[in-house]
Amino acid sequence: MKFLIKSLLLKIIIIIIIIIIIIIITIIIIIIMVEDKNLWKLKEVTTTPIVIGALGTYTDSLEDIHVGLQAHTMQRTVLLGSAGS
Figure (tube, rainbow, N blue to C red):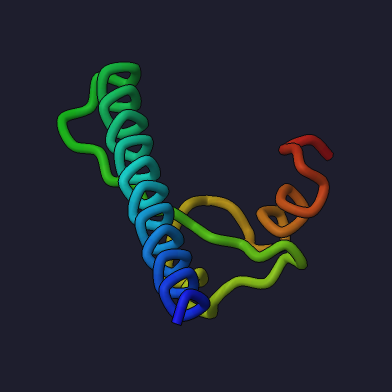
């Protein structure tokens, strides 16, 4: 019985941590949008988060996003950890 309660408590704590992380990421995205809008004096800003896996994998829908970068350039940036050559 104690193991079941500890297991349930651990699951609840993990869910709370995940929710907190999602809230923090949302706040960061909003801050970036406001800063970009003010920096470039734009009327409207759209932020598109792109998630590239640790091995450089990404979804096929990345091709639909027109960001001026090629997919292999973003993969190299992720794998090398910098935007340099």
